[in-house]
Structure formats: structure tokens, C-alpha cells
Length: 391
Image (cartoon, rainbow, N blue to C red; front, top):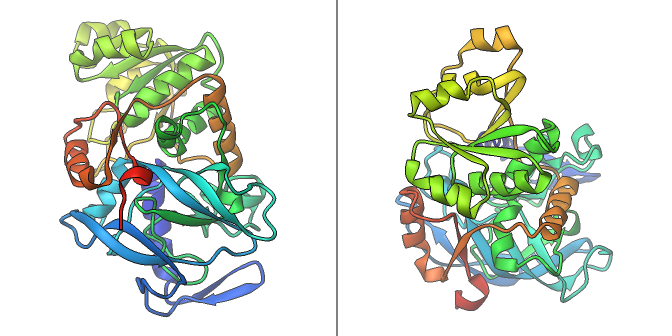
């Protein structure tokens, strides 16, 4: 299951719980009160929000909770723009709660810490990704898999434990429990590192879990966008041979000369596809559009694994017979838990892995969304929140 699909599942669960009470530890909170009450917290904040499914964002005044004992308050400096943000502001999944302040690739600087916080100090750089809460007591949480917790709380379009609505990183400040903050290495750039908090962990986690990190193995990467270009970079850092698989031959030069892929394969080239049959140990499929899985499965060796990270709007046809004959696997993946996300960030810093980005001011966000929908970015927009978001 890809992260976008996981978001859909979690939000459906949250919608069912909005009329009930649920707890964190021994504390119970009532979630029946009005959602989207911007003035019920004491700390004033400003962000950019979509008010309806047109997806148009504009300045929005709201509030954040005060810093609790285990909380960190931070000033947002940069926030990446992901396809998930685009889906939510346009209500393409039919579950957006407006006003919608997106953003889950957040990097900032700590401005205040709670009395019980031990992980951060004022002045530290910090990352906040797709998670801001989990139950802390289930089997998944105990195994550092908060991303699979039944009560996982995503960074926006969800309810926090106190029953108030969560707003994302297209805003000037954030408050987060220290468990969900990522320590930021000094050598990792803040702007180009921000997309790692979602796109980076989305490709790193399945590569680790599916044993696609062993030097000498050969993997394919389908799609060369925000996730795909990072998949190539991480794979090369692991010492893996990489073939980029695309429907756009024009991407060959950038894939090989800039990103360091070993090979490029045009999926429309039947001769090339036939020659590649049975050559790959695994494939990371980042394509979000409807596409044919048959040629990808044909490229796998026996025991090979095709990992789906995109979330096409329509179900894909799965050819079962080729899987049966060679014991091939089709899998899905989400983001990682907090421990693995920290591991990924540290690995990226050590190997100088960053996203290829275009930094934009806050007031460019609507144009950036429009260009993102057309695939007109190499490969990630990042908002310079700290310098361009004004009251």
C-alpha cells in the first residue's frame, strides 16, 4: 500500500472517530466539538489555506496550541510541496476538510521546548514529516512503526488528540510532540533536505525492507519525479545498479548524466523491454497514473519484487500467471516510522543526498501547484516560508 493510499485509509478511520472520544495513554479527549475553530488556541499563527476544491490558496489566520511539557515549538523555514498536498487542496480524494493548510515536508528552527523535552534545545534545526501523533502503546508503535498505528495522526487534514484540527507546514509556526521531531544534521541543507521528510523516506523504507540495498543487485525505478529521482540517488549511495524506466525518452540524459543512473529504458521500446526481461531484482514504481504492470513484472527475476508507491485513481490490472511461475511479488509501501526516518536523514547527510529543488516564495504557491499538476518541475518545489510568509 502506497503512502497516499494509507492516508486515505487513516482519514476514513479518523472520520469515523470524530463523533467519539479517544485517548492518548490515560487521558481522554472529547472530539465532538466544532472543528476548524481558528481561535481556540492561544498562539496566533498565519498560513496559506485552500477554502474549497478549486485548490486556490490564500492567507489564513489561525492558532496553534501552547507548548506542552513534551512539545517543541518551531519557526518554519522551508516546506516542500508534494503531490499529496495537491490532492488534498483540490479534494481529489473526496475527504478534504477546509480550510486546508497543507505541508508535511517541514524544516525549521526550535523556538521553545517543554519542561520534559530532552531531544531538542532552543536554536536546534528540526524536521517534521507526515506524522504528528500515534497512540504510543500499540504493537506498531512499540516496534517503531508509528506510520502503521491505527491512531496515527497525519500532519494536516486530521484531528489532534485534543479534538482540534491539524494544520500543516505552509505556515509560520508549528507545535509538535518531541517524538515526532527529526534531529537535523548540520551538514544537510535545510531547503534541499526538506523533501526527504516525505519523498525521501517513501523510497528509502521499501528499499530497506525489501532488501534492495545490497551492493551488486540491479533495480529499476519507474518514473523520474519527486520520488523517482530520490530513489535513484539512494540506490546509488547503497551501491546498487539502477535502470530508470520511463515513457519519456527526453529524460535519459538527466537520469544518467545528472542523477547517476546506470541505464535508461524507454518502456515503449519493445526491443529494449524484451532484452531487459528477467534482469531486475526489484522495481520501485513511483508512477501515480494508470499504467500497465505486465511489462514491469516481466522485467523481474524469480523472487523479484515490484514495490508500488504511487496511488493511481483507478485500480490497476495485475497479471497473476507470471507471478506464479517465477514467485514474483507485488508490494506496497508507506512512509517509515520515526526511527527509520531519522536513520534516513542521517544516511542522506552522510552521503550528501538532497532533492533537486526549485525554491519559491509563499505567494507563488498557486502557480507551483499548477505547474506540479503538469509535471513542470525538476523535481520538487520548496517554499521559502521563513523569508516570504508575512502577516
